[in-house]
Image (cartoon, rainbow, N blue to C red; front, top):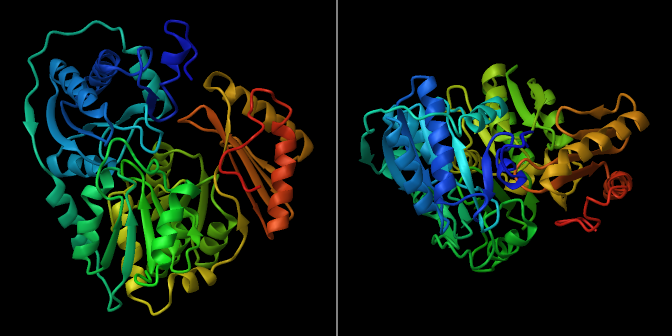
Length: 475
């Protein structure tokens, strides 16, 4: 959070590491504050001589009015606006290339619960704002406005162009796949079904109609509760699906379940993609965040690639992918980035899903058999512990220092604390998007994983500011 006393703690807390997100209320996000924030972003663009921007919004009740306020702010700063309406974050990124716009505003809170909103702001192609950029936007909030000609406004539909682009890049094999797709009533339902149908899959839909009330569960592929219904459909005797795929609200994160109904975390998906890609381009780098499994690291090394561990966050990972000239990148949360000559290097769950289907359709092995060839560890889901925004980073810093004291040379502190043990590892870090800590544990056996969990919990339990009962826990 930005250290400043000019605004309330609640308002400042919206300016996070690589996104701006907050609750929809009088203090944080409302049309007036949205206008102010996007006006500041518009000035950020003009300082870089960027005068064209795409605007899209996600499937939330507040999003149309927030998009309207964003358009007004951009145009009043002399920015030409290309409005693509209800859409996904990767479609907005694609539209930048398609329409030759270096600026973009995606009104979205991604997988955050209802009652939240926010923005993903672009700074060029396949680039979103990083911490210093977010701070710059914050400091431009109350700067004087210039008198500029009103920017142009163009409404345009890029849906067909986006779907055509994905389908043209995929070469399906002879195996006809049966796929369950769960869009959890988010925006991905506008795209995923048609993409998979055009790829020749037998596609079974689950909650694919956009619904701002989210009547079943919020679209978050990391949530175990949200995967239960998809598992039932995959295993239904009349369906017998080869796999299931779920998407978050703005379509940049993916979740997968195999034909046996078992969860496949996204770092395992990245391992599958990396293994296949490194067959064609050995020696390439693969970037991943601190939450990822040792399975991924072992697979990259065995395939002759270079593993690059980095900070969690889509902006961080995109930047590291460019810096490393990497083939692929990904996060445990479900963001996967395909770069090089295969795609644009931004996180696009629909394209990642299509690449996986391409691979699975060209082999006789089942999804679970392919996963069975990878090194195996016992890994927890992403566990969440409530902790207030204004203290979470300081507390994680204290815990990190304690762990470094007790386990010298065993703590990777590029993003929280990832502690290596003989039988696995444990991670504690502050969420950049919500008032909570994120914890993950992995062991050579389930017992090892649970023991590491208890070790890390002995450190977090010292702090009253951290909830003692964790959400999505393994106990």
